[in-house]
Image 1 (cartoon, helix red, strand yellow):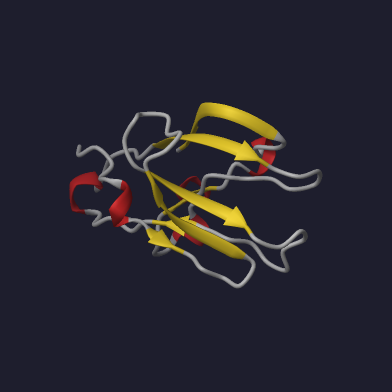
Image 2: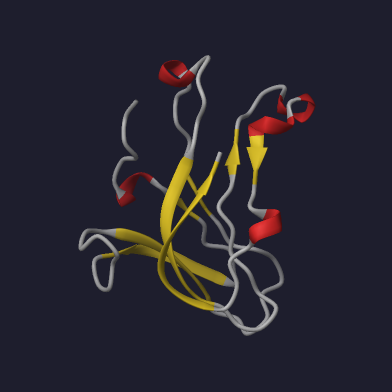
Length: 116
């Protein structure tokens, strides 16, 4: 199984209420990381970072996505990791996890989270 690739391979959303990018300052690993920041006090929608990977080497196996996350979230806001397998996943609940029950809230230092 291949390890996650570098920060430059992520799709960075730029919805009107959010900005995203790649930085090398204050990262968990000392290398590049992707960030997502709200530029509005109360965003109208959600912002996201995403990555698609080819399924070939994962077919028939189990997939787990983990990431280190650091947050500065206002009251009522949350962050989540999502893992979704496209296709006929609506009938297979194990093909979708969005940390709904364990959302990240408040201000946190670099902490590792995972979805499977």
